[in-house]
Length: 168
Image 1 (cartoon, rainbow, N blue to C red):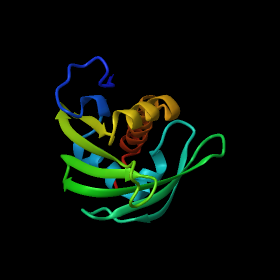
Image 2: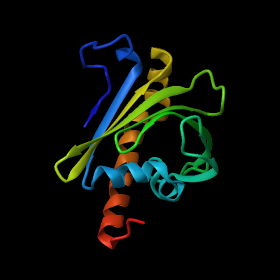
Image 3: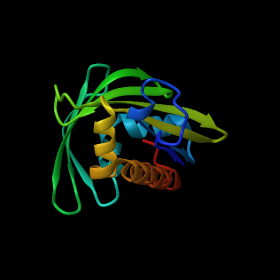
């Protein structure tokens, strides 16, 4: 389900700096997109297994920011910041993600939402500023597994919403 870029042929200058994770989620893309765009949803599923999220500020619009803290299961707190750089409703979200505004190690991420029958194929394409930062994120923070776990939590959350019939 993921392509770490290591075994894939170099398709672009960024290939050695990127991580691609995808998952098919059993819901219409409008609902999957909404789960990424409203803080009331994000706070319920964002982050790897065992993590919780506290939002300090959230404004979903191009140029808007999400300032939040991820709380790890071991008590470690991770300061996080996202600024949205492109939004195409129900299709695509591009963002810059770092520890804070101006973080020189911030990475770019593009989320695409494609219909897959009655489901949605979600792809997260992350490009780090350098190969070294990408490799460090993989080794130190286990971002591939964390990304897969995050999308799994999203899928579980959306299944719960669909099951309850709550698409508010």
